[in-house]
Image (cartoon, rainbow, N blue to C red; front, side, top):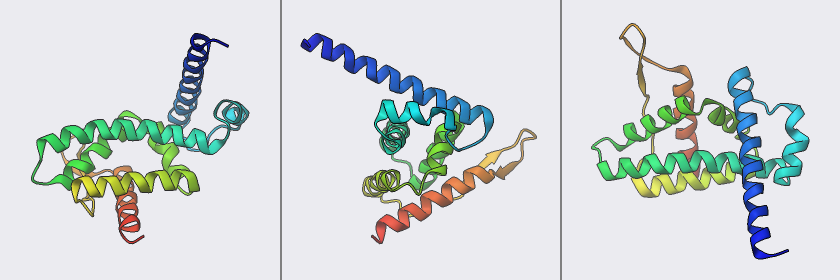
Length: 167
């Protein structure tokens, strides 16, 4: 196989994996069920080489989007960095609900938990933030409230930060 053929095969694999991940995330978003549909497990195993690798690919997608927004936040250097971080989490969850739902559902998976712990250690090192605040949201009637899913996400982030600080 030539180098060009290897490169094409690599790109084809990237596209197949991206398509499969998107398919699963679309189904999770559409159905509201956080569990990966059983119909996709064989394809995930074949394409990613295992379910852990699939979850790590999903985590990489979240981490890349988070890092891009974090870059902008660090450039702004806000007085309240913790609120900025909470805002990033809430915005990404709204943009990619299936992705965060998947990652939250499988958060006890050892490979995924290790990757997320590394991400939170880097976040604490970069920002100095050791706790996440509640994030109010605006309701359609113009009143501020707290989003239960957002609150759960912030709570999970808080627990993960405390865990990596005390590890």
